[in-house]
Length: 141
Picture 1: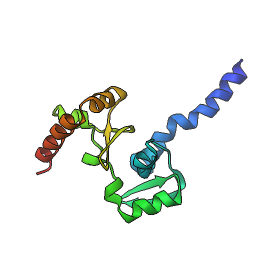
Picture 2 (picture 1 turned 135 degrees about the vertical axis):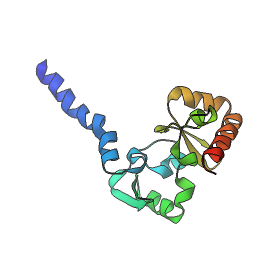
Picture 3 (picture 1 turned 180 degrees about the vertical axis):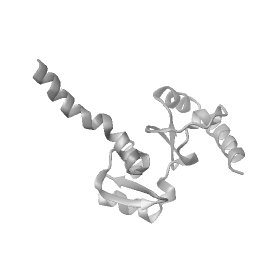
Picture 4 (picture 1 turned 180 degrees about the horizontal axis):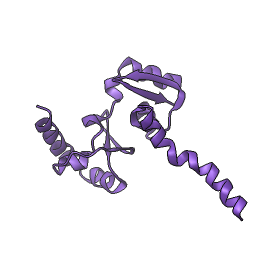
């Protein structure tokens, strides 16, 4: 029984520290492939051996094709509103979004802080995004 618990702990430990390792290494989006949001509709962890540097961060990708796509136009794949939570912005707060909770609206990926915030954004994307962009413009004149 103790052996089983230790084995599970050893397998789960790397998963628990992945976001910390990504932050410590200046990985953008906690190592998630930015092209995967729109291309695959998923937050896919990129590979450490397929990466590029942009805006002082290391961006990781699932495939070399995704990396090449990103390198051809990085602004198109970077999260909107600098990765802040769209719902929080629409409510007048500046909070970081979570790269694992996202919504693609038009051609742009936006982050939110939680599943609850994602559900809110999906229910009323135009109003929330419009309010968030207005707050963003006030914060970044």
